[in-house]
Image (cartoon, rainbow, N blue to C red):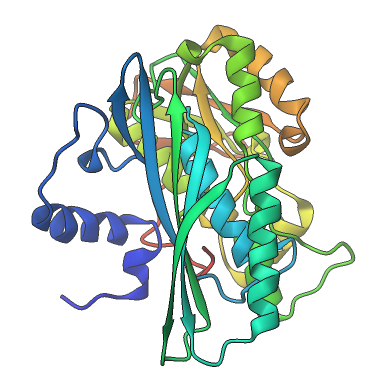
Length: 336
């Protein structure tokens, strides 16, 4: 087996790599909580009447600086968001930098300031780290780990028939912004990445409707909305029906997607949450999301159904229905 870029892109090939190679060679021990075999956004470790949530991420985005953010903001946001979608308040972070020889010192300082500013936005302290310099001209890779505390951990496998499906804002912004930037496609309004920490959005909803009424969450990063919904449907063995007309997409993202021949449903987002809640709390959850700055474009996009277990059905704008298939990999490489 030869490793390809697609094996790290968040789609079916990546899951194949994890299940057939990684999980077969690492001894699994969940420590009584959610472990590696669950393939969730992090792991949980029981700690008295609460749970410690632990996650780690590597970031290899290209270019390092892009409209709306940079690798530093991306690294902190990505780890905070993995904690958030498991219901964990971020407590502390660690950072490891792998820097290629010859990397510009001013760019390094810019990245570090961005990491610090994003951490303060949460807020969460960066308490420890590691730095390596290698002879290869790789630029810089940033690895971040985070721990948080959850009163009631949320899995991405908890969807129940009858639940409502929400997304906290417009989808496709991050991946399409990077791809447009790389390809030199410009618009009257600059297309920007959505990269941001979303703990405040998740916490606001939980305070309003209670953690027990949030049944599943996922941040739709690699593989986008399509991959996130398919994972949630498959793990819970339920169907998910989403309405194309209700999925929020910026006009410029839609236009760029068509020009590039890419589905916005399959590209990474870095500042959104897909949340599945009890149907009777859907409108309240939506109202609370929309009151936050990062959730002002939130929408209820569908519901959990008993038909087509493990599949996602997209109801098109003209009333037809088709499967929203999980991507083989993210069509935009090196975006996170």
